[in-house]
Amino acid sequence: MEDFIERSARSVLRQSYDNLEILFLDDHSSDNGLFRLGKIIEEFPEERRNQVQIVINETNLGLARARNKAVDLSTGDFIFWIDGDDFITADAIQLLVEKQQETGADIVTGKALVIKETESFETPMSCGTSIPETLTALLSSTIFPMLWGRLIRASLYKKHHVRALDGINYREDYQVFPKLVYYAHSLAELDEFIYYYEQGNSYSYNNLAKHSIQIRLNKDLQDLVSTEMIRDFFRVKMPDLERLNEENVARALLTVLRNATRANDKRSFMKAASKYVKTPVQYIHTGKFLRRMARIVLRFVGG
Image (cartoon, rainbow, N blue to C red; front, side, top):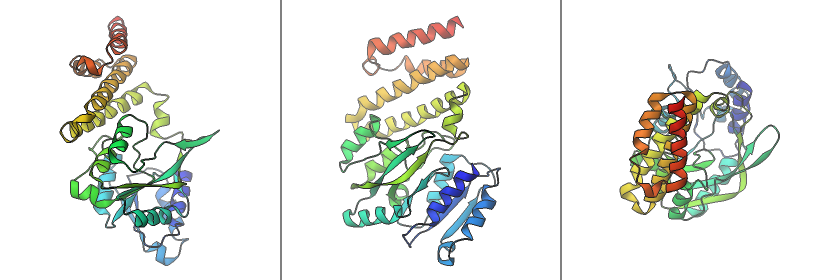
């Protein structure tokens, strides 16, 4: 993990854009990354070092709360997120700022490349310029709701009190980014690749979940909370998105039921089942979803 952090930090510190406020947030890490970060910062000119603030959490806050803290500490007009195992091109911020100044957009999205051990490919992040179409695409999973790789006007967070829910550290971006898009006045995007999303880190939450059904179930439960939050947010503000949101919740519930069965977690199963049976039938794709639900129930009871 330390090698990923070093690469990520260097990519940030090497930015060609001058007017930066750089926050490195250490969420009570147990490795040597903080020491190595300090050594890397010392390699750069004083002007860049003076732009850096290292924030050390005395206890592990989790991703959601750590992001909220970073928003509160930031003083700039725009926020750009980068995860500790990812990296960006040297001109990433420069290109995003130039596009923002050209268009006046509240959110500017760059292209991102997924990096795996044996392959790389573009991740679908393009927002276009239409806010209603972007929201529909986000809720349909046509584009991903990642916060990283985008220049986001800070006032969208602060004026509208957009925050991630403490403790929801997986898919916390899904409960935040659609709200930011909703409050934005305009969107823009770059044609250039500026962000590299690393998936080769074997210690990442996503990779650990592949080998542990309990971690996978925990992810599913957090995903369900985020999905319900977005449904509730748009229920009044954009009722025309009701079907998409209700179907997303039904799908998230079904995933929890499936993995709760595999993990033999009766409490999670029964809690999700009680919600699922109350879901209006028009949001369950009737036959397909109900048949799958029946198989899951039979498997759980039979086990």
